[in-house]
Length: 466
Image 1 (cartoon, rainbow, N blue to C red):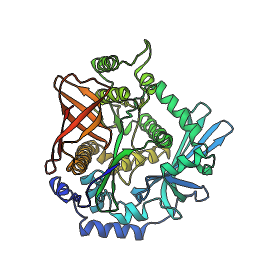
Image 2: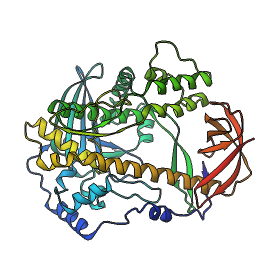
Image 3: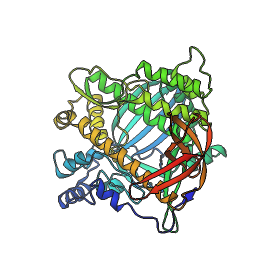
Image 4: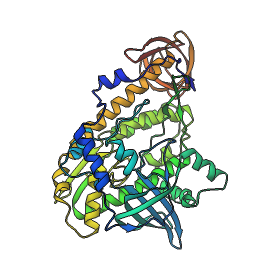
């Protein structure tokens, strides 16, 4: 890990550049406060006896999900409680309008730009430990092979017993002292991962860059460690999202997360990449099986994963009402999938959840939901694009701050993609992705590079091959 100087800047200029809102309007805040005061628990199932836990990054306050994973005589039962935002957001009101305008929470190192006012996102709607909360409770029965056999969804009252984080859960599992609520998570998580590979799911395992605050006032840049718990926790969310998609497809109304199958030339390009870096791709082995066999820590694997992004182009949201769209699946997941598990942080989840609640209760989907379905994909596409640009700009800015005083120094880097006189590289320490000039770059191998220039204002760094 390498840190910026204590004088490392803030992200105010970046917030201005992207016109990020600084606060909520008074009418939005007033409506949120009123929603908290008027919330009523009547008509909800009491599930406060279930020992829910949350698993989130340390210090997180906007807690969307809480889980209990149990073994049963025939497999597993997953209780998955999701924050019930519809209980606090009146359709057509100021709060609803502002959420549709924002689309999702944006995360910056010096503080987020929330989708909902913090009185909801970090307060009354968040599944904070020890608090009774309104939730949408999914109960999914899974057989011994990891396949879902029954799904139930309804409104409930829940209480999280403890707020956990990925590393502490991993440490407790490694030590043989898991929390009882997630003791069965590794077994179910592994089964679901195996099924994902058989479905043809594609998972990118490029190193993730992580920014954190420095005690001296600067910023630290490091690789984010990815534990097995990360993957297993994600599988519970995917299981729920796939169950939601099936409910919507059978009812012929809803909104799905979709991704078209990769073009044949993209797969051939990936095979070429594997050949270039010297990694054998056995005949008859599918893309998912091949990728799952790679060691993410190896330079050759990093280069292959960098090229795998070509397979995952064209993701979006597809809404429908009355007849099914031409595309109902997500190629990266290997099946139909919908977003319903993060309504505090993502707009579309609130609408998808309401569809599932109505359909499973044998009721009509609310008119306000049906009316919104046509607009939600456009709103989410815009916010996804903004979120990606903001995230990249934050990382670029910290990279520039971190390297500003190191011009002329040499580093070790992995070549991810190579052209004739340029390459995309991953500097290993600090973890920086950048362009590098030179010749005859060996893809999937380590090389020496020299930092030639840093432009802090433009968030640009330049390297040359040594």
